[in-house]
Length: 263
Ligand code: ADP
Ligand code: MG
Image (cartoon, rainbow, N blue to C red):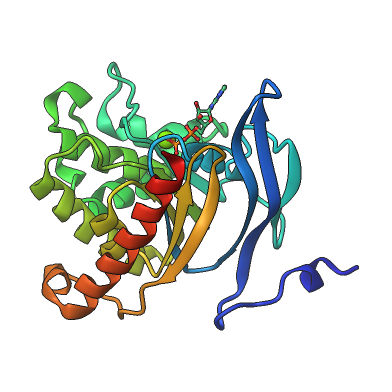
């Protein structure tokens, strides 16, 4: 069978990857993820929304190839190339002894590229997150929000097709979080990447995504998928619209069901 025939395009967007009936168990006892099937298309902004322990991080680690599913499959439509993936975790995970620009250089350094050969890319990534003036600073000199921006710059410096974000803003105050939410959307407009974003915040998932996958725990599984059919670009005025409120209500209800089932 031709690889291209495996994955039909959905919603007019070219497919990027597909997970089929993915299951992950740990030690043969904990079913972290059960029967997860998910199609991700290029340009999607998909949120995985659910309570703690429902397998969100497990799903991201499987997509990142950091571990293998117990059963089921994960296929990249055109294969996965070097630099196709950027990952942002809840903790910025910066090297404290290295300057901001050297932290952002890391994904290239790991691939054997000298700083001077990728300097333009590094500075451009820092410019896109608004931190070019801080390229020579050390992480300890930055606020929590700025550290997270560096972490985002590092994830996108290689212009990956897919960025995975695991509760990146959960540790930030609400004002900083809203600002980073806005900036993340405008960043995505500029670089046109696909994002899979893990959160347990209904409001964050509605503001950011065009699709919300609601998950429940024990065993970790998908219980609902919602479309957020509000156009981009979105700014803070979206948070006061009836469309935002009704999507948040639907997502809350689905999440409430998820929590109820998990209890
Ligand atoms: P979430 O990110 O939604 O909070 P996780 O994917 O971290 O959920 O975890 C899902 C379930 O799998 C939880 O019950 C968790 O304790 C379990 N789990 C995750 N990673 C491991 C591991 N490496 N070993 C054993 N159990 C794990
Ligand atoms: Mg997690």
